[in-house]
Length: 119
Ligand SMILES: [Cu+2]
Image 1 (cartoon, rainbow, N blue to C red):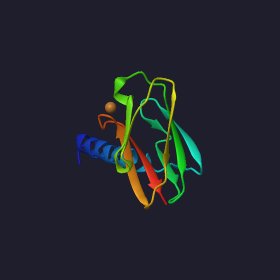
Image 2: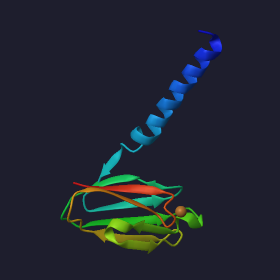
Image 3: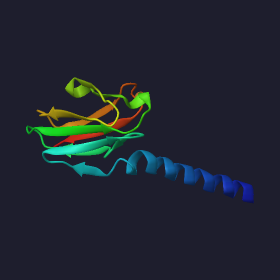
């Protein structure tokens, strides 16, 4: 095997590793919420993944500190919620999920995503 082939193989493996990390590991950290949670909207949603209990009401408060218009709306299509988020203002929604599962929400253009896991 020539050195350039070895480099190509190593680069390929690193690429696979990074892809795996980006899509699988990155979404692993879920925040267990009981009652209420604040989500910061800046270049995405923080925390990105929350878990909430089924059949109980959870209050989610979004605060957008990112001026990009991309993030000015949040859409929780599974819960039929679409909210305008004024800059630096708290916007609260209440969810009382009746079924378990994973529900993805996004910005108005479906570019940034967050996840709500109902258990
Ligand atoms: Cu967007």
